[in-house]
Length: 449
Figure 1: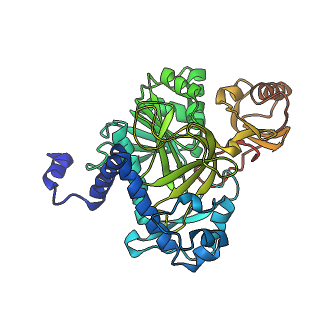
Figure 2: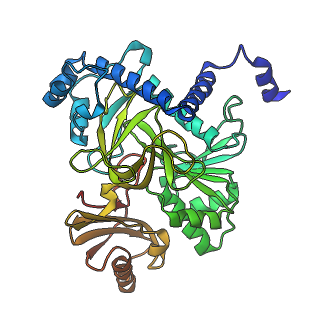
């Protein structure tokens, strides 16, 4: 009967506990999201109360913020509001983590240390428990069910997560209980965009997981080189803003492929997943986080109004992120207008403020530089655009040969057209760009408003 037959005969007594947890957790996540709004609201309130009760037992939590101690005081839990707590900035989160030895209840399992990529500043070290990692994983499996994916089909991944590997990709063995097909993991920084494009066309996966920047660049190279693109069912993206134009390009090039974006941060894990019925809305991962949208004064915005994203990780007890300011901008909704789901939804995800052009007077504008913009100017392999002042940018490029005067003029003209004619652009050709350690490559770095 082969391996599949053996798996069938093993069920239920020999079912591996990891697979059982993953599937059961995923179904709980979906049940919480699809049930009445009272379910997830009551559940969140209880999880938050447990988290704060745990934190209040530790000197390092109370000692690091007088404001936190004053606000929490003897607040009656039945009357407690999350807004009673102060907003946690990134600098405070970093200092809090460094102030003590991480500890969690024994039932949360062992701790694992990690750090942010540092793509928006100094990397922040943090710790996560086995329980926190398990719950994060369950949300991605829930999304597989939500989006109707066939887990027996081939899935390819091009990100920084696989790390360096031998050959063209790292083969991830099939799991008869969870993912019966082989998965192909490919390190994004180990190959050129042309090599990625050729590999993707050869492998022709049903599903592809990557970043919007890599997706955009691969599409440009496929069109430029006249490669035969495969038919892809879904493209799962993360880490950067997905614009409507990129969705349309993906549909045209990959035979109707739909982008299914995921919104997350390294410190707390999954935050929201794209609605399965709409490109415009994201369902908040209510079983993992509480999301608030506030204005610059920290006050809640009205329904459908853009503001700053604050996230509270309900299972991040080791390195608590409470009302954590991500530096992102989004619009909040009490429910999903796209499908009617009762969980809160997000739209108009502009992403990090650092990705936006600061035009002064508090005004910001999102800019997307595509690979085809650069390739029209010359053989640019990599680039990074850094806003150094309200009217100036530093442009770092890696090319196959020394930049010619005509290529430099073409880049200046393109940047004036796409970014803005009011800015000056200082071009620097480098042998290699010094990217921060980690999975993310932030190719556009704006000034924080």
